Length: 78
Image (tube, rainbow, N blue to C red; front, side, top):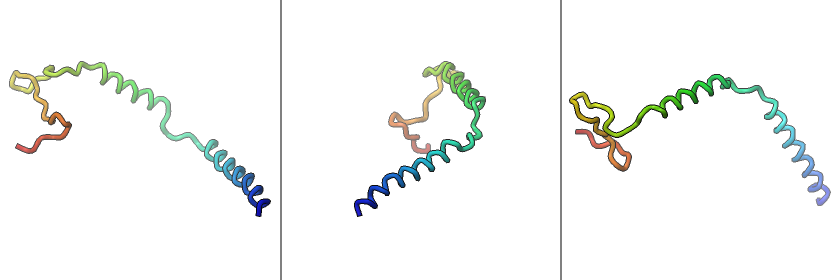
């Protein structure tokens, strides 16, 4: 029985190596570098825009009012 256990260890290692080699040699996904860079540039441009309270207008000449409760939930319908 002990000899079987010693043979099981290399067998499991060989199966693990085979699974890893198949995974490592897989075809790259369709998400290329150009798409990733474009997404990052859009994110960076959005983060560089000013985001301050009272910078937007509500259409009546006053600052925009946040419709979100302090705990992050939307308020009940009026």
